[in-house]
Length: 141
Ligand SMILES: [Zn+2]
Ligand SMILES: [Zn+2]
Image (cartoon, rainbow, N blue to C red):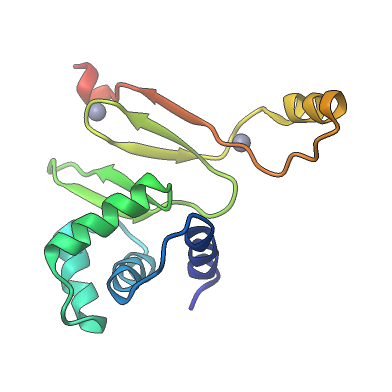
């Protein structure tokens, strides 16, 4: 199991999501491929470790992992949607409200704000969430 998978599994547990055999098969397929995969490709790869994996549960798992920020939706040139594991660690998402295209980024300038809030409130801030929504270039056309 890779570090990335450990990190994702820990994050899922914190969110109260159990990594079932089917979910793990989907996650492993994406982690091992190290490139974008369509749902059908995830299904084909995932069935090697979990023969009972259905395409419907691939879609459900991809949607779940996407909603938790572990998987991002990627547009490919042929207009076919594919999926990739989102970068581990500190990351934020830019999401197209129209088509769901997701782009992960780690640049953010919240450190001065975090320091200021800690000074003002006495909190020890350990985490922040940032999500930007809008229309992607395709949907703006
Ligand atoms: Zn879009
Ligand atoms: Zn940040």
